[in-house]
Length: 420
Image 1 (cartoon, rainbow, N blue to C red):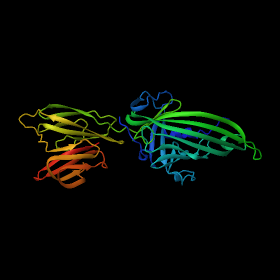
Image 2: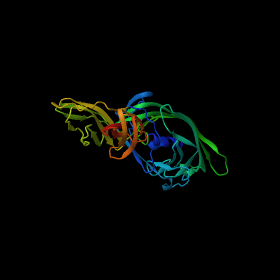
Image 3: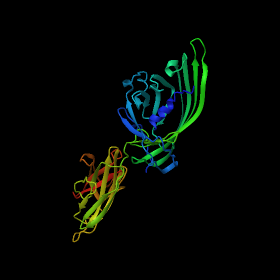
């Protein structure tokens, strides 16, 4: 008989179906989520190159099968034996569950319960030792090796065999390496991704007993090696793409985080037409035209400036997976009879945009600094009485912030800070 349970293949199918990113435990499927993916069962694809700043394109594929993976609490499943060791149960069909334990440092498979063999008989397969599926943080260059085992005894009727009992055992060794980072393109969008490779070497054996009075007899054994390639992203929750051992691609239906971009055309007398070139199907936009006017939300706005000058225009593109911001200086010089609106460079903010850590410097004494977010909440306020302030807002969310400065002459100046 060559009826191995193939449990780990089942786990892989469920879990694993341009900037370098870091995957944390919060980026993985959480209890209560359902992640939709699809698989091409016909087309064979190649995994592409490894290394830094790569591009992988898998657009010449078709969805043949949809896979909906749900995460529920172990206590809501028919098997209570994992309630104390697992905090998730993953299922594609509400008939078979993989019991997982997600912590801040790793993602561990504890076992499987349900209709594993597809013959209507529920069986329980604990992993001892269990299997590490991910470690956190996951970054380019990560590598780990893990061993796992299952060893279960079933009645012959559980596996449709005319024997008293069947014993099925697997010993496996896993090696997992994050081999690249870059941009992955699927039929859904463009994802900043990490590319991983997972190799498994296993030894399976099946033993039978004809009656309760006779010893175990080796029925069959097999040694093999499998591998799969997978891509992780911040928005995917499960791998956004996976190439199985057979070369078939599975990919997520979760939209990629938008990539904001725009161009503009100065049509004269301060009128500027903005052309939105954002990618990954944003569902909403927020425009800051840099002149203190109300934010715009249309896709391709036209804006009227009243003074010549340089305006830092920012676009935020958003969808269900997140948002992205881009800012460009727009130079207005076509308004006749009006002087430029540029100041005497009394203040400078550097770097800007920044990662939340920046400096405000002036050629006069700054008495007071106030910084607010786009909804008017004050996130920083300080009396400094000097000409320079080093500010740390690295714990704040990415986006646009506004500052108000009061100098020693009681003159107020406003400006904008971009955290990316």
